[in-house]
Length: 238
Image (cartoon, rainbow, N blue to C red; front, side, top):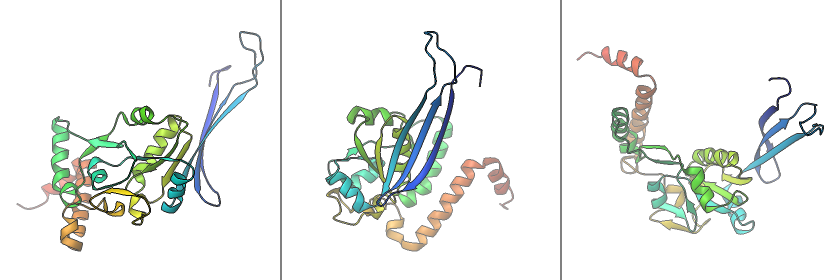
């Protein structure tokens, strides 16, 4: 750091209250001793903190009913249509990838023949307008409960909104798959906890689940280690 410049420090911690698991992210901006152009001494530190609450489904219900949290569903469109909480906002963290470059076409084909076929998962990419879309519907001072199916996307979405200035964020720890029927008023053809179930695994039982898992692992291996995969395939006798 150059002399006379500003220093920054940030960290993230986990703490527990009697009701919620809370992640606190902090940013500290420090200015060294000295004098500004105006002649006023500068000896200040600014601390900015934001908290993300991780709650179970019953606690989430209380946040909405008692504390006025608005619900933002960040799942893809297919899961949202199967079942979603009534009156929630739908802003997907990932959107369907319809790009037509050769690399994307190959990956989409592999995806559709593996995880798409067995688990009914769409081929997606990050939604570049996620934060701006949420901001257009809810101001940063809003209390926001973010939901997804398993809890992973909601955590990632919470991090994005945290960085964008939202200060009152909560997530359901294990996602909507942990929500018992009747906890929230829902809309759709199935229960919230079953909205992630699609594809052949819903009709072919355990065999499809095992085979699907193997094919998904194979797809990921080919995607991330294409050179090694090519060598292995070359060893297979034709």
